[in-house]
Length: 424
Image (cartoon, rainbow, N blue to C red; front, side, top):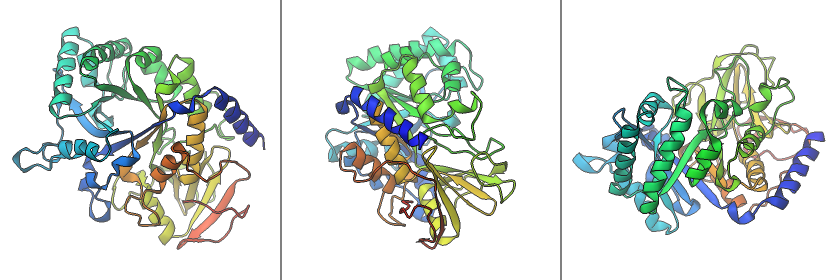
């Protein structure tokens, strides 16, 4: 009950301060490599409904150490030499939605940090990159640039990256304004990352939007289970260090450091993190884990499952699913396998939270992880949840009561401690 009261108090107090008109951005990231997945996992640009978004991000292009923008997959991205023409097809989505903005995202985890660090540390290279980035965006007809540097002053970078990143954004801002182009960033969310990597007020002043990557708070790199994207701190997290790894703590920290609330987007994960338990009898968050969980049939990455792969497991196998009302996210387990993910219920709560905090909207990583074919019910169940809440058409409630536990076998709910229906 204490958690419920705290949530409601926060929601009501923040709602009084928030301008609902600012909560209007629905931003979707598209992983361009997703069309290479086999069978039913292959995702095409034509699978995107552009009417459901205000902004779409094409991920990724790269940065070279000499300040150029690098096309990472010429066959996928370009139309030349028999290529698939991903850039052109992606930007053509604006023909179906006149208000849609399409941006290209540079960086990502696999890009690393060293090339960014090299470029921003030299004023000449910075200017070269700004010029090349502007030409790239204009040449391929994007609406702007999303900078996804993971992360300044980390992974081989320098301490000076923190301020040099702001200088880069300020120089990009000046040039992009002349062409009426958008400039956005994707940023690590937790206090730990902020303290290492960001001048928050400087970034906020220079850009149009900041996607807070509110996920990967826990994962199989830990030796214990934990939710991928918890809204609140867990009762099992007792130290000050543990209590920063949740959405509520990170949003408050960004605001305290000088971010403009209306520029912040609450980043959501349409994938789950998977673990292998050390003992099948210990299944709650914080339980010992020995490593990553099994890879998905289509995404084929150990430790990660798309939402449609998770739904497939629930429909075909016997899983116990628990909705943790303390952290406002579900988790599930079967044998030694343990999954943390979001579902429509948890995403609806997060959208309500984001609006109450006065944030600008929600961001999705990534569209291609949702059940985009409707293999296990409606198409795009996660996207539809966020869209309905943002557009005032949601009929779901967000109140918390007791922890809900269900055993799922072939789409059958066999038990529920409070007789509520579980939205997968």
